[in-house]
Length: 143
Image (tube, rainbow, N blue to C red; front, side):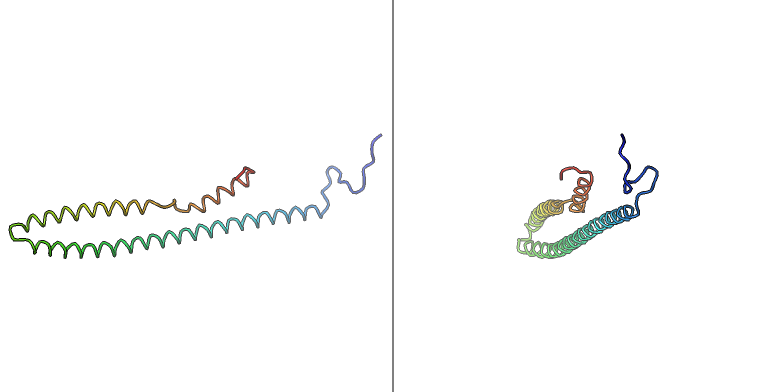
C-alpha cells in the first residue's frame, strides 16, 4: 500500500512554491552583499597600507636628503679645517687620511641605511594575509 501524497508536498516537474524562490533570492543577495563588503574592506586595507608605505618612503627620502646635505657640509668644513691646521709638508698626507676615514664612514652608513630599508614586511602584507585567510574560510579549511 502506498501513502497518498499530501497537498503541500511538491510534485515532480512542478515549480516550487513562490516563497521558496524569494527566500533563495534573498539568501543569494545577502551572500553577494557580504562578498562585496569583504572586498570593500580588503580594498580599504590595501589603500591604508599603500598610504603608510608612501609616507614611510617620503620620511626615508627626506631623512636621507637632510642627512647627506649636512654630512657633506660638515665633511668639507672639517677636512678643510684639519688640513689647514697641519704644517704644509703634512697637508697632503692629512688630506689623504681624512679621505680614507670619510669614505669608510660613508660605506658603513650606506650599509646601515640599506639594512634599515630592507627591514620591513612586504608591500600589502596585511592585505594578502587577510585575503589568504578569507580564501581558507571559503574553502572550509582551518585558519
